[in-house]
Length: 101
Image (tube, rainbow, N blue to C red; front, top):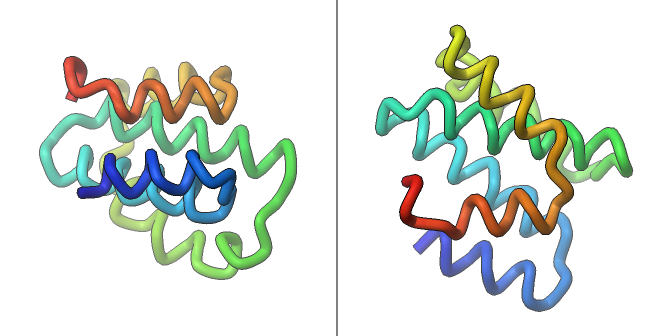
């Protein structure tokens, strides 16, 4: 459902919704034990925030980040670094690719 929601948000060019869904997918990856995927998605969010902040997302960022950043470790950091190099479109493509999930 999160992937479908991400695709919908992206399809209507709703940037806030898109970033929010990427955060949800990062959290799901964390719960599933895929720290590298969680890191890549979170790194992509950080890159997008650096390009142009999202006030409403920023207001909830720490709350969203806490469980994701708890997965920090070598795999998470490797993914995070790779994610910071992605454009928003590349991050969405990665998030929607279920072959790596």
